Image 1: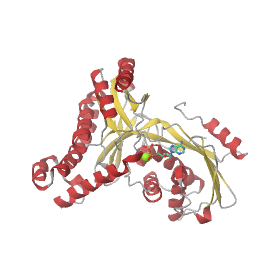
Image 2: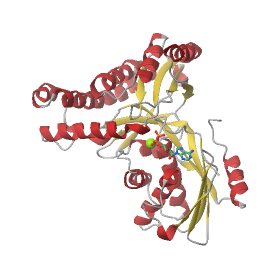
Image 3: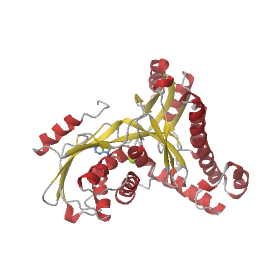
Image 4: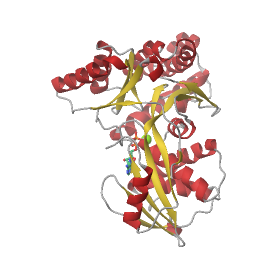
Length: 386
Ligand code: ADP
Ligand code: MG
């Protein structure tokens, strides 16, 4: 699968399926979270960047109230839905993402009638690179324009989040949609998840002779809902015991007191969030002072915290991180919600082949599934591409 989306080809495939040209093609990227994991729903800080892999949607409005949806991925069948009966029961499977966005926009009073939609995504699904938000953000950007809704990008972030929370039923924060909608080329998005304020932070890897490798372990995180909910519950408990609205309000200086108030497991969960928030702030400061070559230790410390305190890593992710570090990576960590998905390694471009080979070999030696290893670069956010 080619990493870059070819807008003309997507439009052509739409025409082949629906027999007419689309009104336009919109794309929105997946993301890598450079650092700041599980801090989003604790109203803390995150630092994702959009990657050069995206979901593209070609859409044509219809005169009636019917939606027809098709994806290039999976079963080659067209799903047809009567929008006058749009409900949680009729938004099933992958169509819950695009239809969920339409449902939320309609709740907000945006007039959307029938449409034909074709999706082609180069973001691997379930790899922790947010293929789901890429779909939501592409669809939200498209209908914002097609329906002249004039919603701001920050408002579209919340539309995508509501679709994911209320329709798909995944209790996620605003990290993924913010990265997909707010990013620009060559920058990471420093996001305060409490205020939704964001700042673009230069992340010019190429100029520093660096690149970021993604190691998709192919370990599905689909079963992770229970683990994710349990982590959220621990965080809520920690905040409640401390009498603060969210763990964002606890600092490293409060940790000794926290250890006396909380059971040991909850304490370790809290310690991850508190130290991770600080690591995000430190990464932003270090990027400004020393550039991307100086953030490696923070990435690796983040991984250790997720492995030991938050306990959301897995043997495959640990092996990818350890092997990358042993072969010249400046820093490495799992990225995304955990329990599988992908790890990232910040490496000098010169050692790319060495690191790739070493990880492939280590996975083979351990009898793990062959991982998918690819470089990503900071890319622009959601936009119309045709
Ligand atoms: P992630 O966002 O980390 O990739 P999620 O579980 O949040 O993982 O989202 C994956 C889901 O998104 C898939 O189960 C599928 O429903 C949907 N999806 C992703 N990519 C595609 C695609 N190309 N076509 C159809 N559905 C997709
Ligand atoms: Mg997702």
